[in-house]
Amino acid sequence: MSYQNTLDFSREMDNQDSLKRFRDKFHFPSFHENGVVYFTGNSLGLQPKSTGEFIQKELDAWAKYGVEGHFLAEKPWFEYHEFLTEKASKVVGAKPEEVVVMHSLTTNLHLLMVSFFKPEGKRRKIICEAKAFPSDAYALESQIKFHGLNLEEDLIEIAPRDGEHLINEDDILSAIAEAGDALALVMIGGVNYYTGQLFDMKKITEAGHAVGAVVGFDLAHAAGNINLELHDWGVDFAAWCGYKYLNSSPGGVSGIFVHERHANRPELPRFAGWWGYDKETRFLMEPGFKPMYGAEGWQLSNAPVLGMAAHLASLDIFEEAGMERIGEKRDALTAFLEFVIEDISKKNADRCEFEIITPRDKSKRGAQLSILVHGQGRELFDELTRQGVIADWREPNVIRIAPAPLYNSFEDCFRFGEYLQNAIQ
Ligand SMILES: *Cc1c(COP(=O)(O)O)cnc(C)c1O
Image 1: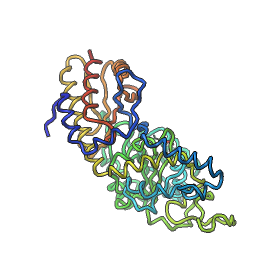
Image 2: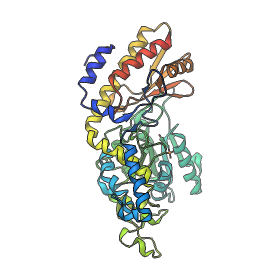
Image 3: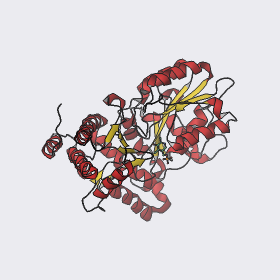
Image 4: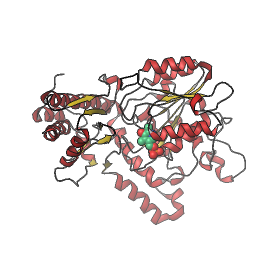
């Protein structure tokens, strides 16, 4: 399709957008006189207007029932997490028993690695991406030390080749093959937070399994963004946070996936807690841990209901929109934004230089574009911020922007271009 960098064209695209009415389901930040172009749904998604009601409902139930709310609330807290499971499983392409919402992301990565990173003899290496999100890097590092292993030898980081920004996927696959029976775990971000590069999770999973390793993904930047098929791809485990594309409140609850093939393996090591214990006999409080079937067997604590309520409000919206439509709009919106940026870049070629380091191929990215700004990047970013663009700056010189298909419009992309042009001037 041929795009035009004009207001009329962007509005025409909005008119044809099947998700157009979803924009109105969200609160847009109101602190800026121009209104904002909100392109940080990859960092903290906007608040659905329904979130307040969902949380208020549980506050009311708490006021009315006290502890009895565990059973008497309209959605009894005792099983509150269950109301989220099926909706969350649709977002990531899993069977309901493979998914549970619990705790927070980094906590969950650790809990899953306790079960799925089991170094034994020669098989003890982890493959991950270089420059992973810092929390993941610390989690991996501490897991390796926890097992008394050696970081230098046992953590294999796959970096972009010299002079390149993206990781060549063949380098991941060949590192996996090369590590062979010394490889215990592959743990990669499904979408790299910095470049927006999307990895072929199916291929990586197959490669890992071919050498007998376990394969897990951090889907912080993929859940609610990418059309995932975790079950069919055969991924062993995954975790994601609820507050980026999933719009479920700052620091909100996380989701985990554990493939069906691990659903009934009580022998797996785990750090257990009472909420992972067989639900029917949990309150007999007997010694000896009997895990629940499937992902629920990894829960430690009873559900933080207020955070869960915020997540439920958002998952309802995802269910209504459907990941298929979200994916279609994501590709169109991102391609249009890319076109606008390139147009502005061409028009100002004598003054500045932008380089979009995110893959051009839409099958290799989601909603995010990372722009490497040569020259006066920080000043440009600050000027964009002054005009009302909410974007993300990463040292030394990258601006990350993410048009979220549920609430961003084609007009937002056009406006971004206008602000960018102003900022250059
Ligand atoms: C956002 C993000 C996190 C954040 O972890 P929390 O435990 O939710 O604070 C971790 N890893 C990745 C890859 C992220 O993008």
